[in-house]
Image 1 (cartoon, rainbow, N blue to C red):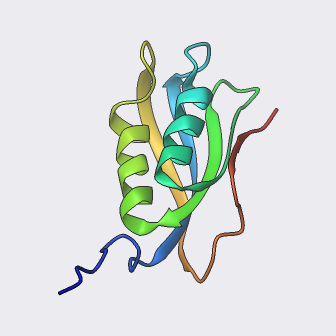
Image 2 (image 1 turned 90 degrees about the horizontal axis):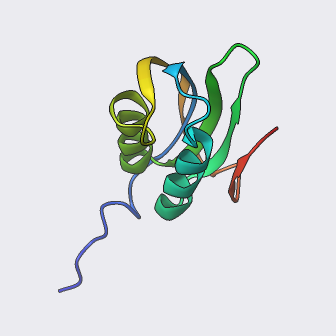
Length: 104
C-alpha cells in the first residue's frame, strides 16, 4: 500500500512578514533564505531602512507554518526577535516564486 505524502497534498499558502528587534547584522536574511530553500518555499526577504526584516513566502502550508514559527521564536544566531507580524495569509493554487532570494 502506497503511503500518502501529507506535505505533497497540503494546500499552498502565501504570507507576508515583518520581523522586529535586533535582526540586522546577524545574517538573518541569509538564514531565512537558506531555510526556505531547504523547505521548497519560494519568495524573498530583505533588510529595511527602519531596521526590520521584510519578506514574503509561499509554499506548502505546513512548511510555511514551520518558517513562521522559526521567524517568531528562533531566528539566526545572535538575533533578538522582539515580535513578528504576518499579513495577507492566503491559500494559493500555485507559487509565484520559483526560488527564495535576498533582495537589496
